[in-house]
Amino acid sequence: MAKSKVVRQAAAAKAAKQGASGKRTIAKNRSARHEYFIEETFEAGIELTGTEVKSLRERACQITDAFCLIRGREAWLHGVHIHPYSNGGVWNVDPDRKRRLLLHRRQIDYLDGKLRQKGLALVPLEIYFDENNRVKLAIGLARGKKLYDKRDDMARRDVDREIARALKSRSR
Image (tube, rainbow, N blue to C red):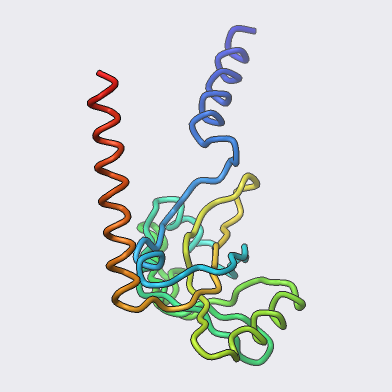
């Protein structure tokens, strides 16, 4: 009886640690929000092998230079490096291979139509495990920023930081 109570408490603590959404972030593309205006976001599954999933559980992934393409009515993820699983042996696959994204047909057709417009791109934003322990990818339909837009964002962040610092010192 006491053991099951301890197990339940541990599970509750783990759920509280994960947050209300239940997603566990593996990797974020922080430079994407700096380089692009994100107009819409989508959630896609990724077609992976077993050793890739085990490697992602070790948080061994890099998506900084990644991008998405739509070819032949399928969405593909290029440039993601998933490190080989440490105990994978001969079952490890090429860490830099292109991976198919799992989206609904309507979503793929919608994205294909949007990508035909000049200046739009599909950018991976985040790889995470959802509440059912499936690997998901947040992708954004993005428009590139100009240099002056980046400077404006940096100035706005600095002003917000100064305001937060002033409010914090004032409340002490």
